[in-house]
Amino acid sequence: MIKEFRDFLLRGNVVDLAVAVVIGAAFAALVNSLVADVLTPIIGAIVGKPDFSNLNFTINGSEFNYGNFLNALIAFLSVAAAVFFFVIKPMNTLNRLRGASSEEEASELELLAEIRDELRAQRGSN
Image (cartoon, rainbow, N blue to C red; front, side, top):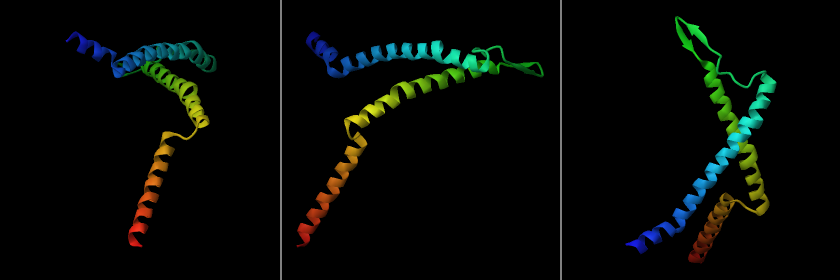
C-alpha cells in the first residue's frame, strides 16, 4: 500500500499540478504587485486619486457605495490588462516565431485526411 501511495504521489500529473499551483501563486503575487505598485499609481496620476472607496450617494436614506465597485472594476481590468499584455501577447509572439500553432496543425491534419479520402475514392472508382 505504501508503494502504491508513493507511485500516486510521484505520478507526473500530481507533480505537474503541484508545480502549477506554486508557480500560479508566485505569478499572482507578481501580477498583484504590478497592479498595486505600477498601474494603480498611473491611474491615480491621471484621475487625481487612486482610491475611490469613499465615493457614494444616498437615495431615500439608502447609501450606495459605488466607489468600492469602481475600485474592484479598476483592479480587475488592471489585472486582465497586465496578464494580456505581459503574458498572453509575448507568449503568442513566441509561439508564432517558433512555428505553426496547434490549430494550424489540426487544420493541416484535417486537410491531409480529406486528401487521403479523396485519393482512396479515386482509386476505388478506377
